[in-house]
Length: 326
Image 1 (cartoon, one colour):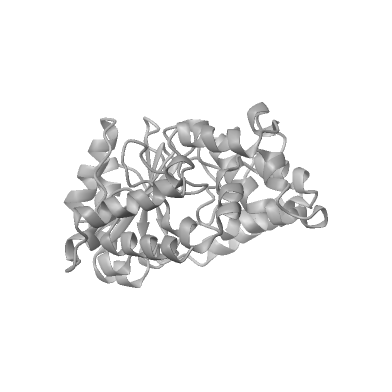
Image 2 (image 1 turned 90 degrees about the vertical axis):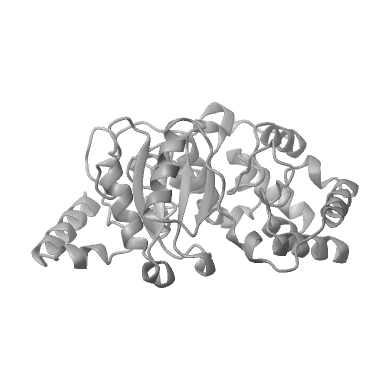
C-alpha cells in the first residue's frame, strides 16, 4: 500500500513539472510504475513453471539448451551457422564457470551457485528467467515470486528490476526494438531512427502494436559506438524456449523499416557487422578453419560456447588468442 502511495505521488510530481515533449524525450527509459491493472497487480498468482523448478544435471541442460539453439545464458545465436560462440564467455570466464552459469535455466540450479547466506545474489539470473517465462516482461507478481525464492523483501527485487533497462516492467511485443540513445548514436541520428520506427508502426514509445508483434524502446550505450547509430532487437518470439538480442549497426531510417518488415514476415534480417567490412587484414579461409579445428579439439562446438554468428575478424583473432593461451 505504501509503495502504491509513493508511486502515485511521484507520478503527480512528474506531471506537475509539465515537461515539454523534447525534455521528456531526454529520459533514457520511461518511468514505469506498478499500477493495479488487470495484467499487473500483486494479487495475481505467479510462480516459476514446473520445468524451471525441476532439478537437472548440468550435462542435460547443456544439451537441451544447445538443441534449441542457445549459445549462452543471455546471448543466443542461430544454430545453423557455424560461428556460434559468445567470445566473451570463452575469454572472460573459465570453462567450468561458463558452462555452469551460462547454461542453467532451472531455479534450484541458479540458486545453487551462491552460498546459502547469499541467496540474494541470484536475483538477476532469476529475474531474467522469470522474464523469459512470462513472454518478455516482469509483472510485479513475478518479482514477488523471485523475492520469495531468495528470501528477501520484495522491495529489494524491485530495486534491481527498476535499475536495469533490460528488465521490462510492462508488456512488450514479440520483437522489442531498442534504439541506442547515448551521445555517439544521437549525434549520428538515433532520434531519426526512433521516429521512423514509431511512425511506421504507429505507436508511441513503449507501446505494443495491436498485433502484439512490435514495441519500441530506448536503451543506454550498447558498445557499438564506432558503428553508430545502432538498434537491438530483443526477440521474444520463441516464448519460454528463450530469447535473443540481435545487434544492427550503421542503420538508417529506411533500413530499420526494412528490418521490421522482414521480422513481420518471419524472416531473420542479416546482422549488420560493419567491422568485418572495415578490417584491412582479413582472416583467410585456412585461418578460420584452424580456429574451428582448435574449437573442436577442446569440445567447444558441442556445448554452445562458440563465437558470434558471422564473427568479425577481430573477434576471431581474439578467440584464437584466448584458446591458444588456455
